[in-house]
Image (cartoon, one colour):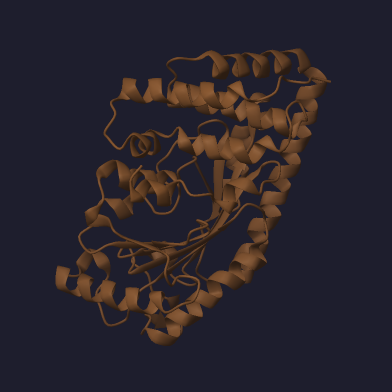
Length: 354
């Protein structure tokens, strides 16, 4: 495995520390330098100057010093996509890479994009709903940036961003949730509509433009103007806690009314994962989703949950290409995915149903 692969596959605290329903949480801040045009309208020379200024300031911040920095133009296409799969950067970020750089810490809990849609997109992650800890962390980074760079800010409108929907706080907070019981009981559609009416966005596993796979859904705030950061986080927390309650109640309904169906589908999924030789990404995600549900319900040891998060990431197409250090076609990905899953689930204990 090359140096890129070693950085990508190093242990992630995010995947190891887990709680039921919640997969991960994120806070992202968008910032721009007042002395330069937005990325879309800036010339390459200005983008280079932005990159140099931002990198110098970020490198002087303690938790970012001596951590990983990638020039995106130096990476192969599948290496870039693997960073999207890992949620360290966005799909848009890897499209225009001439003067783009990505910082991320060894624990994968902090990442910063230079010259994405905005000059700076700063992100912090956790595996729980402790938004206060995340906000304190990203606010400290933001203070360091603001003290050393001339950030675009208007007293009336707040932080100025390339997209009008981010003007104000420039903050997006999101939570990735695993909601299999709401999918099984067909309540997910009504829930999504209700959440959207309250001003929140529902997306798939890999954010904007992605579809929900394996019953994974990302919930994030839509409004940034006219609300404080604390208001946004408070509203999101309330929504997420309500969704968790709905999911847990739906799990009890499934256990009470569809227990044989549940046993059968979980058992079949484990059989597929132990015996497959060619498996598509969608089928694999659906099977792993049922294994996560099995750990939450006590049918498999709960300690497996973090390992399931790790293997779920490992079987994404670009991650497998990084592992192999070469481009794989669709069929080769399906075969490699099955190989990884067979090996992993061979060591998983048998199911223990109630």
